[in-house]
Image (cartoon, rainbow, N blue to C red):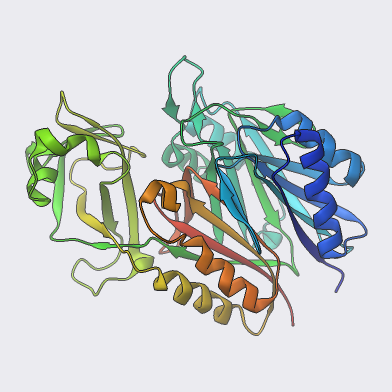
Length: 405
């Protein structure tokens, strides 16, 4: 079967040279003679146009090139962030093909942009759509201050005209943890506020596994007042006061610590069933609003009436190893040929306060399988929860691509 896949990595500060190096390494590592698709990712220290130009010079004109920002890069041998990291995956071979759709305008309206993307994807041959990879610009500074492009309305817009397959994954691109605006690479056009959809044709298939790393920390509580991503009240009390009570803390002393720490989970399964990671959608607190005693979340879907649980993060990364191995087993009898890890940047050790890099567990499992790995550190993750595609926070999504044995 003529499908070849290779990955490349660079820490060169010269963006043109980095672009050339990563695709050169990918071509060599994958023994690729006729590259068809390249996905490039780099931190915001790189110039996307120069990165693209360097890659294009090596790949030639017949290879499609897409990509954008990542806080860091993970490969079989490397795990690094906040520097000049750049990485790529290149797909080649006569049996490789992919559908690609693009829509722009996220900063104007996420739902309208999603609807535009869904309309173009609806024109694909539905028999070929077994999987979907979504990449979108998560940072919006068009009005001069930091905002997030929300994935919830984006996905709502897509659903209006396109049924996303169960094997859907994706992420919000961000080049650093400060929300610095970046650019997307769209096969020669360097732009922003865009969303990209890719569907890989048979015989290549994608399989996914969600790794939240959170477990419920207590009872259910009800959102009683919210507006967009802002939660004002839980159980008819100010949200910050409720969180402080649940943590047995003094709100005035600890409210600053809630940003990027407080995580609320929505159980999509049975309310009193045993905990299953596959049933939960987690929402991370973006910032705490002391004046209004409110929580500002990463997504706007925690509406009044929604039941949530305060989630507790696990310090034991053995679950990453176990779930990665489980996915490799589920791929059988097909042959895994490439692993793509979408990892929340907040899970990196430097930001989470952990002593260990959880992505290193994915690297170990993939090493045993002897297949190429590319990972990106992201702002928001996307995957299917009980057959519904959802945005996720503080989550890892492992995607394994396979061919018939």
